[in-house]
Length: 324
Ligand SMILES: [Zn+2]
Image (cartoon, rainbow, N blue to C red; front, side, top):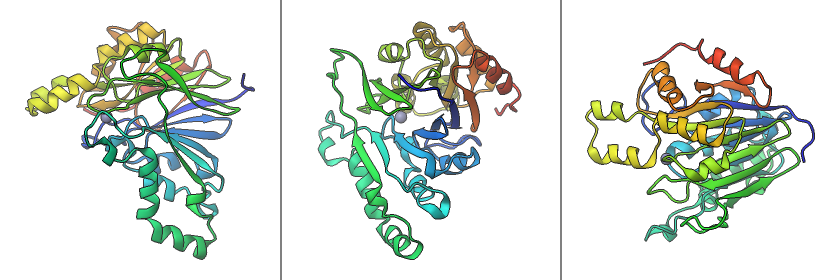
């Protein structure tokens, strides 16, 4: 379906949030296909991380937001403004942003912004700067380039019908989504990118999810979140907070089970909540998964579809200094 391509995954940031518990950037990833890139989430530090990885706005095609927790969208405004127009090698062609619509499960959901409204508000909030730079620096009007889309969900929340559906497609990539379990947030999406080289699947934030297992069938790389509940318990966090972590996130063993059940070729743990050593994260995931496990750090690059990529990535990850 696609012509030959060169597909890479870059882990721009790997930390859960909005807490800062280490030096890792907040949650953000890039899929690079034939030099064009697609972003998944816009966590703290993604602007610098993308620049350091060599990504420039002029090659940005689209962004995909898994859900509207702030640690996944907090740097979206800055990302757009730091990657806009010729002076910064930014985008001068249309860029699409896909994400959740309004949360109809909440009684006040109709009053709260979904993705389209959030982008409208961002453009309004920064209208002074956005206007000045059009006349003062000959940048194209940003409002004419940003195309925001609330993702349509063609299945019922009770899971009837197919749980996986196509969100976006061009001549390089097809992006599919599944509804995952991140209560009380709704909707929360996992995304799968298919290219000529293979596939990368992102769990988003979720408890162990059967829909994700379906979406990630035989995927080359599964990027899955993980939480270390022991850390929060030992640190004396409030039981309400710990219960949210338990109901809405996945243990490393759970991430391993999902990877095993889906037949994923390589499990990359990212969005790590709570503190543990790399060896601890890895050992716990490997207790339930027979394939290679990488505990991601910010700025790692993985080649998709190369037979030796998984092994090389694991060896590379083992060289990264461990931070407790
Ligand atoms: Zn979340």
